[in-house]
Length: 317
Image (tube, rainbow, N blue to C red; front, side, top):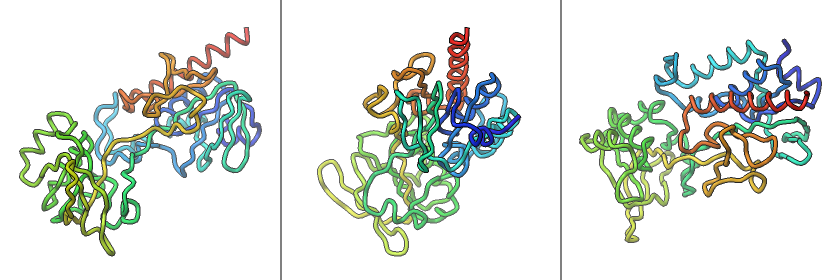
């Protein structure tokens, strides 16, 4: 069986094109290949996996598997994908989608056509957009409490956000940090009660409600974070480490002004994962803010592939 890359070199015309190679896209690719559809999966990053590559702790709730981290689960997905000849085409960013012409175009100007399109471009972490947020990455601004917990040993940490991810990271970092401040805009954290109760019981964790971070400062590395409360009072808080966890936003730009999106940019789909654009599907986190799980993403991939197959078979009758 030839690989996706081989297929793409031979023709630019497909039954199904999949954009994004996280769990949803890989699942859709496996199912499409198994069902005999001419398919290609495009991934803009140099490696497949999507949000799986940002999971550094154990994954215990995916049926049938217990893995140490997201990368291990990604590797298992790709092993299965390779078996079906459904390997993603990497470092290929799709920059335009023309639903009327039935084509997508990559950054290099290559155009690909298909009967059906499956978007699985996932989500990205929402940014604060404040001074120092980007310039201090790797110099005190960290990406993960699980991965970078050793950097916080005996340090003062500020976590921005009050949801599950913020509190979970606070609990992880409090195991080694001297102090962890959890800073959020609302009057109470939105995280699940179990996380909040554990954090409140931890003497190293301090809640800073009704407060926004407005700047991260330092010289060679982070030395402080500037805060502003809901009354307009400002103060400078000395910290060594900053972790931002204020939620995610969908990578739905290719469908903007084409498909129906909700107020937060998530793609609206029906029970078959179909968007409001004919022959176009959206799966995974970009279309499922209520249940952004690996299981949901994988199931959506199968649903989209099966639906495409049934439609193609009907048209061939």
